[in-house]
Image (tube, rainbow, N blue to C red; front, side, top):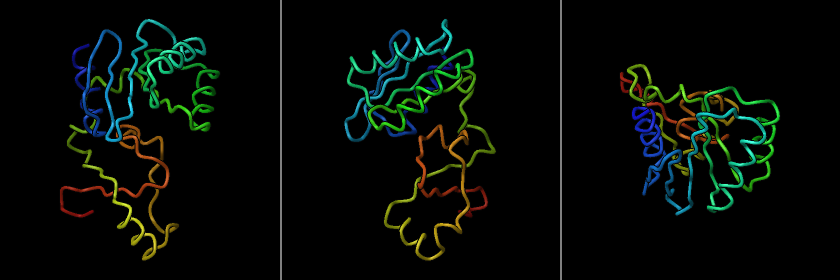
Length: 165
């Protein structure tokens, strides 16, 4: 379990979170805008609607705007729907990951090149020069996109080993 916690902390650091604190079944941190984030580990329970409601309650009690759920068993359809509805409401964002994603650090793999979000000014220049519809699209379900918490519409630079972007 130590490796899993270490890899979760690496992910939070890659997302530029600071003040990372590890407790029993949770990790808390603060983003660059001083918004709190909490990562909950649902190890012994199934990720169903009740677990999601309990997590939402805990997030609300701690004034959390971004919650991350780490689960062992596949989420139920109602749990997925609740998380999606929250995402669309804009009040609370919940991201969920299977525990198996943290058995190793995704970004330490030799075939995963560094991904960085392009600054807004440069993104605007790229969109005007090439057209937004001409750029390649990376899916929101891509593990690297989920790892860094990139959002829809972000333009990413992938720095490859041969120095191409």
